[in-house]
Length: 452
Image (cartoon, rainbow, N blue to C red; front, top):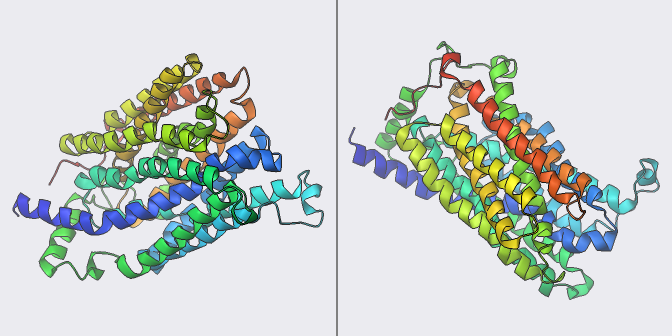
């Protein structure tokens, strides 16, 4: 079939789906990481140490990890439209509940585990937020495989994943402005307004999924029968046989395959670095000597690393799609992030160099993630995709727990704070090496992604 026809078709699908998915992930990432800005006020108000904050930030990912695979499997049974709506509405409500984190009382239960009521509430809500959001990101990755053949997935995933950069580009100044200018309204602190004003929109966007997101191409009224047939044929042509060597076709094959466990470890290495930087970036920037209450300025500076990442990862993914190469594209991302973390450790006293280093970290991790998923997806068939994607992303969730906790324990505000980035650099580099080793061609290469 004519390539112009296909380009037009897949551009049409992208135009219909990506803006809504993009908006949903902007909301998801904003509600997930706005705790980084809230900390600038909340930690002082509630007496939270860096260790308490680091643990609370990471507990989100424990809940996320535990419910990742069940959520993705549920989506295949319930349908993407209704399941994504459930996820977004529930996490929006829980995110808004953080305004009451200092108002819950646990009748001695908190003290029994060595916590005060505010700490217990903080930990519990972060855990529940992870439970609520579990399955959203891997669910979207799975959902995109219903619409795009493997050879086109990296560029599409990059468009969707640019929401991470966009949420920080938009969310940084927005969160800073809310902290600075809404503080005291209605007897609420700025951090309480932050959770409320960024939680409620997630509920609203969630209901738009219910009305505008088709479950699959068969349910899309804006596609013709011929267009549906083209999508089905393209996906089937690039889909490996259930009996083809090296490809995983069943849930048990996914859960017991050593390669996917190793790929999960490689992915976790990247997310350890990503979320360590994400949750602590406002605090790091504040230590450049900025006025402690200049929250808007902190937010504007935080735009730079994420904005560069959002733009560059799209071009990187398109290059990967054109060449059909995934392994080295992903490894180079790990390498760039590792170099940025070493630079951050060595030159943390320099504001200019630190901003360059932060940009290297975000951009490198953006490179690695958008090419990682098409590479990993090549090792299982459509029947095992839900479990495979969720299982690997569960490792990523654990990385989100360990990264913020590592910096919180060492303490970025101490004399040894810069040294926290050296183990992060080693972890990121090791993740890239593990990825290369796990995807050696002789170990069974993914299905050819260059076919069109």
